[in-house]
Structures are given as structure tokens and as C-alpha cells.
Figure 1 (tube, rainbow, N blue to C red):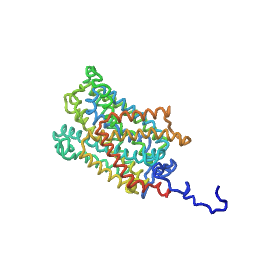
Figure 2: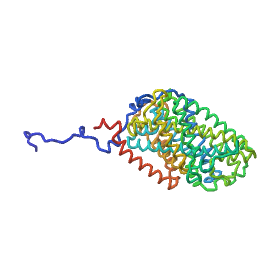
Figure 3: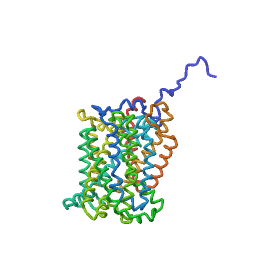
Figure 4: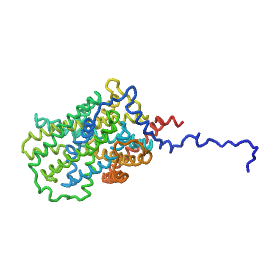
Length: 489
């Protein structure tokens, strides 16, 4: 027994006074209420709420519709054969499960950070950083990948109108027979110019371009069906389910962007109501058009004759009609359509970095808002120049697969986040709820892992290197500069 009269022993720091360990710091969460309260606030200004349901839906369609059909279809058909239509359905189903989770979280936490912010509120800072780093890969690299395809269609347009094309040395990246892809850099700089004008002006330009791209795909179906041959579907799955899965993983790149509306959470007039509607409506429209166009394309051209050209649809139009006019017209529409994708995905990238910067995890320059336009001007300039140089120097195929794996990983985390938030914050007001939860989020998570497993070893290596670089940056910079860190000192 202790002597009752003995002086009290020094017990050392108590649990309440001791600083949290590194594990606790890595799992620190940002409260949902704080995320929402900080919405729109940046360094020196605020984002402006100017976007309605129509503009948000057009942002999602603009960021998505075009990449898979105008750019990646030529790569996917040789992998799956006529069953490429099934590959589109599988990729769309994978996107649908994740879209349901995105819709619930976007209506509950309507902020600019998209899945990065959702992870921050549910799984802690380290997981949020990993998710945000994946989004940097998803948005930033997909801008470059799509810009590469834009150059292909620009050459198709120039050839059909004035009979001149940009030399390979200036229209293809190293490794694809070129030295520097000048058109890819140009389209990124054009998108940058629109974004510097503000969200409302960018949304107006995007809406016009989305209408043009939908009209182009409808026109392709009307012309291409005239060359439809049922014999092209006789051996529907020549490369088996493995080919369908591999093509689906590549084509998932074409669904990247439906979540772009969620990055506009701080610029939407009624974010909690309109974001879930915009996400679901855009995905339905996109999937229907993809499957229809793919079915017509394979019906009009035997799958063995497809090449990896990024201008596959324009070639089909010329072959079906025997005239260069229709192919040239489609090339013009594709030039406009793919520019829309560059514009909206670049927009999403800047808003992701805006949210990460506001939390202190990346430099403050990314959160500075210009008082006149209400846009993060320095952020837009830096991201645009980086993506433009990347587009000019890296081949499309490698970019597309690297983007897909980053996106699938982020989507998998969103499916986990929606279940966690249901358990930790069951009373939060939700304008949309994932049906049959947690079953559908679990299916979304499983589909994402399955699609990731279908990607090549090289893609996994690139992803591993990217994630390692991200963790180094976090522990060197973000871990100590996080805005949540001072409260724990």
C-alpha cells in the first residue's frame, strides 16, 4: 500500500494533455460542418455561386462525353471485338455504382473538393491525401490525354478542308513518331483562357460545345447505320471475357468526368438539390450514347479492321459514304467536342487543388481567388501549363491507362466513404440516398477493384511510383502545414 502521507508522485503527461501520436494525426478528420462552412472561401476572395442544374449537367457531360468515343474507341475494339458494346456497359455499370455514392455525398457535402473532401470527412487526412493525389492524376493527366486526341482530329479537319496537315514532328509526342505535340498544347491554352474568365463564362462556352458534340454523335449514327452489316457481329466475343474486361478497363477512361459536377459544389446556386440530379442525369445520357455509337461503329466496320487511330469515327464516316465531306464534318465536331472535355476536366482539376490548398496540404497559391472574376487565376495558370506540356510530351495510350487506375482508386474510396458517413453521421440531411446501402456501394467498390486488376503491370508500376511520390510530398509538406495540425499542438 502507498503511504497516505507521502508526496504525490508525478504521473507524467495525462492522456488529455499528451500530444496525439502520429497515427492519430494521420487519421484526423475535418468535420462536415466545417467543410460546408468554408465553402467558397479562398485566399483573398470567394468563388461565386452562379451555376444551376442545366450548367452542372453540361459540365458533367462536357467532361465525359467524347473521350471514349472520339479518342479511345479505336484502341478498345481490337481488345474486345464486337463485344466492345458489352465493355461499355460494364464500364458504365462500374461508373453507375460509384455515381450513386457520389450523388449522395455531393448532396450532403456540397464542396469543391469532390471525393477528396468526402474522404477527409470520413476516413481521415492520410486517406484524403491519397484520394486527392489520385484526383490530381485523374483530372490533370486526363486533360493531357484528351488533348493528344484533339490533335488527331484537327489534322483530319485540316486535311479535309485545305488539304494540309500538321507534320508528325509537331502533331505527335515522342514515342509516337513526333517531337512535340503542338495542337495538344494549344487546346489546353485555349481552355485556360476560358477558365480565367470565370465559372459562368466557362459554363456558357461548354454548353455550346456539348450541344455540338451530341449533334455530331447523332449524325454519326444516322450515317453509319447505312453501312451496318450484321455479319460483323457473327463472332461476338472472339477474345473471350478477358478481352471484354481489358477493353472495359480502358474504356472506363471514357466515363471519367461524370463526377466533374461535384467539383462545382461551391459554385452551384443550389448544390444540395442540383448536384445529385446533375450527376445521375449526365451518366444516363452518356452511357446511352456510348453504347449506341459503339454498336453502329462495329456494325459499319469489321472489328479486325480497326486501328489505334484516335480519329476512328471520321474514318468510318468516309468509308461508309465514300465522301470526304462527312468525315470532315465529324472531324470538326470532334475538335469542338474534345475541346469541351479539356475545358471541363481542367476546371475540375483546379477546384480539387483549390480545396487541398485551403486545407494547407498543397501551397497557398492554389487557393488564391481573383476578386474580379471569382476564379483561382494562379491555380489555373499553373495547372494549364503543366497539363499542356504533359500533353505535348507523352503518348495517349499510357496516359489513358494511368488516368483510369487513379480514377478507379478514388471511386473505390468514395464507395467506402458513403457507408462510413452513414454510420458516423446518420442524422445529416441528405437530398439523395444510395438505395440498398451498403450493398450497392460494396458492389461499386468490388467493380472498381476488378477493373483495376484488368490493367497492365506497367500501369500498376506507374501508379505505385505516383503514389510513392505523393506520400513523400505529404510527409515533407502537407503533414505539418495542414490547417488541422495547429489545434493539436
